[in-house]
Image (cartoon, rainbow, N blue to C red; front, side, top):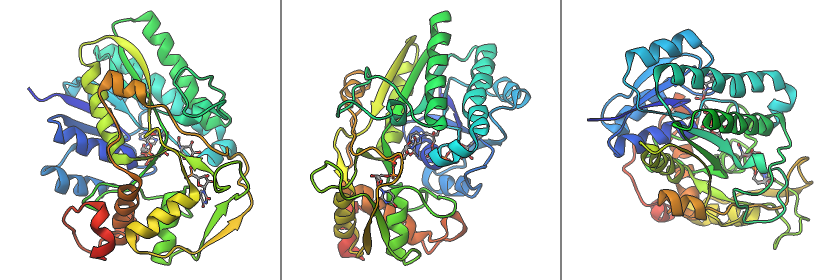
Length: 356
Ligand code: NAD
Ligand code: WQD
């Protein structure tokens, strides 16, 4: 029998890719999203990739009445909870909105899961809960010292889920701490659609490549890193998506609480990413060395060994594929889901430079 997975935030960047991976593994994704940071047209794109339209409910994860109805009307086996707000700077300006969506939203969801007897939950946390790490690679046991309301909201949910599991040990909770998700599905049909000027490196690079932005500001070139620029653990969004499928499979019927890093375990500098992007896509990237960005850490990357050991999951896609797939999505959809310049058959990212 097909198992149904409720995917809150399933229209978003990571959630939409997780729906593809779930469907490929034989699960039935049921999306719940209020589209506050996504586009309803993602549903059509998902239909093209999956071969049939995924079920979806438009609504807010904080809406108790709606959630009660969703759990009553669908046989849900597990929940993956992506719905949330994620912009660090925005969270400093609007902390209550962040705590309400991220923390209260999870309280409502978990309470309705409990009422419906659904006890398998995979939660989207973030490496941002570690704050400035003492060392890299960061193990899951490292101290958590989140530095923004966003990071604290994720850490609060982690603590709340720990208390929930302590009181109800028959729950299966898997907390996934993602490092820096980038890339897109190889079809070029779904990807990340930032609103306004991107904060993150990869979408900014893509917009420089299309000519929409003049040049990339490298935020700091005097860090104590091999080339002076910031180092991060970039992970392909399809690898992350497959990590969620592995988590759902692992959680099935096995009560417990697990906290796992999802990253590659490899750090790349801003210059590494620019160079690889140019190589993989054939696009020259104009850049300027600028000052450090306030709040940035010099370098961190995760230790993904526990996820490998317990879930059998390992990131398989390298930086070249992350760049090529991000670029394919951007090039085919210069205005995100509002535009589309043609459908492209899946390619290995490495071939893209020649293809262009
Ligand atoms: P995203 O904004 O693309 O996706 C989040 C989705 O949740 C969106 O479709 C949005 O419309 C929906 N949503 C937001 N509030 C909602 C609400 N109250 N009710 C229903 N739907 C709501 O973000 P993403 O990059 O796909 O991130 C998914 C999750 O992963 C988030 O919880 C985020 O904090 C976490 N995360 C993201 C990153 C990253 O860099 N992208 C890193 C670590 C963790
Ligand atoms: C990466 C590197 C920048 C833009 C953020 C959140 C984190 C998590 C993932 C949700 C850094 C440099 C960037 C630019 C640059 N999200 N950079 N020029 O800051 O590591 O993590 O996204 O949980 O919480 O903080 O990602 O992509 O912004 O930056 O030089 O225009 O690229 O300084 O070294 P970050 P990022």
